[in-house]
Image 1 (cartoon, helix red, strand yellow):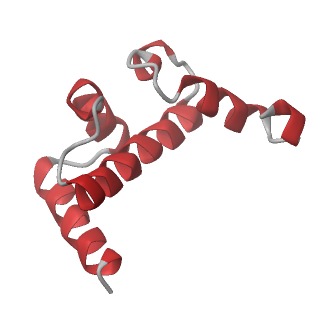
Image 2: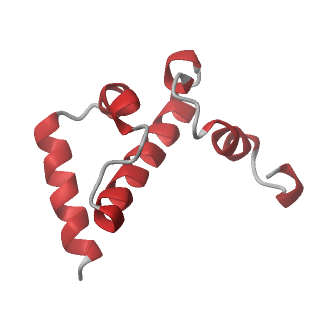
Length: 88
């Protein structure tokens, strides 16, 4: 990623996108938000494409919801909106 001259924050996210403890070990609020958005989007796509959650969703779900300040009901709403958009 560095050879593509991407910003350092993007390089760290690429490097750590499979690190299940990244949110717990990350002290940068902005980076935690980006990571959480990435994991949420990854899971929404996985559900639409493969009809199952992404492999690490169960491990990161609660932390992602906490970082993004959303609850289960709001997550369900997001999933429905994504589904509508995806099948547009």
